Length: 248
Image (spheres, rainbow, N blue to C red):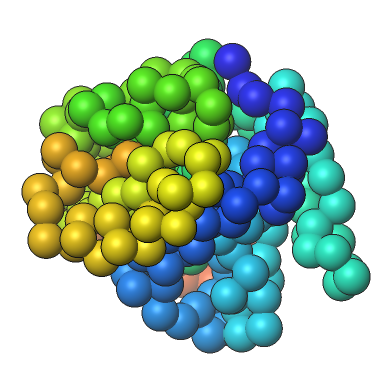
């Protein structure tokens, strides 16, 4: 079940904890993808907060928001690039996207297999995607005070296995959200310290979310290529005055 767009907006833009979570995940994302000059970048679910660094350099940025969640205008004060769409049928041409980010998209989907098929369809040759999901062993998945406490949390093995089943190649993985999911002032103040400490801890144990980067598998054609030979135009014209006869 998708969360409501108003609840997501209030968390990420109007709460201290949400802004800190946004900074943590976006910081990891920009480490993996430091630039996107000339690329088409898209996000699905509620990935808009993560896409802002690419607005100025990417060829195009799209924030795809599923119908059950709802849509909001984004970015504020600039031409709108957010789109309301069906969860498994996006208004995007096949092979059009170079970089794709999913946040609050996969774990809340009622048809995850169909969603992954749509992700594969829109990714172009050499395209990359990053799937961000709650860590089942993390504290954030155990609290319903944040959006990460809803939907299906994953282990890293579960997520990577599901992605491989849909013919994605796992490139690398990391984690984010090492701070505690608490709105209390003490934990908010010490959150930055936990984020720094978290870099030295195993991702499968400490991080609140997993971030798995994948590429789209391409299968080369097999066998010998046969180039059809075009008929000789002179011979074709000869047939008009001197029809060819079938051999006896």
